[in-house]
Image 1 (cartoon, rainbow, N blue to C red):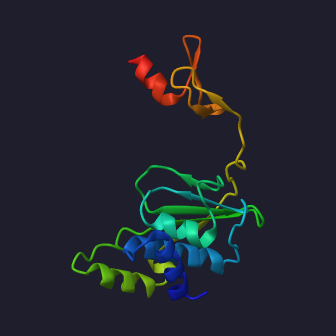
Image 2: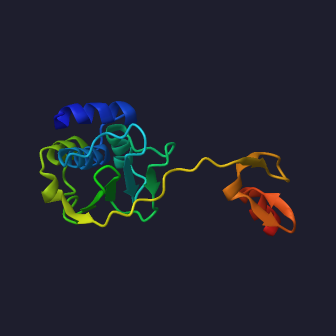
Image 3: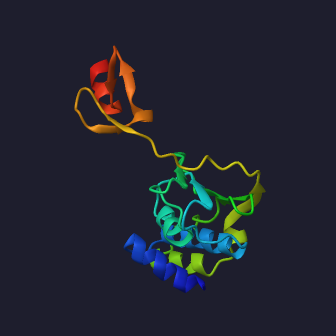
Length: 175
C-alpha cells in the first residue's frame, strides 16, 4: 500500500488530516515494509509513549488496539513507538528526532505534505530492540464494587478496610 492509501485509511479512522496522523502513517508504513503484518488478533503489539493523533493511525493501519490489549500506552509525552511481532519475535523502536518540527513557519498542510514525502530514517532514530512484548490480554472476572455497585475487573478492585472497592470509590473513601 502506498503512503497516500495509508493516509486515507488512517484519516477515515481519525477524522481529519494532521501532522500527527502523518507520523503514525510513516511508523506503520515502515513497520509493514519490514514484513510485519496487520494484526487481526494480538500478533503485533504497539507500545506508544504518547496519546496524540499518531496513535490513531497506528491502530487503524497495524491493527493494534486498546480493546484487544495489543496497544500499550506509556504516558511519557514522547513520539516514540515500539512495535513487537509475536510471529517473528522481533521488536523495532522508532523515536522521533528532535529536528523534525523545528520549522515553525510551515502550515499544517505543508507539514503533512513534507512528512509524507520524507523517508522514515530521516525522521526517526530506528533500532531493533529485544523481543519483550507484554503478555497477551487476559479476560478477568468482573465483580461489583461494594460502594457504587458497578462491575469492575477483579484485578482493579482494592480491598480497603474489608470492602472491595473500585479505584474511584477507593480514592473518595481514602480522603
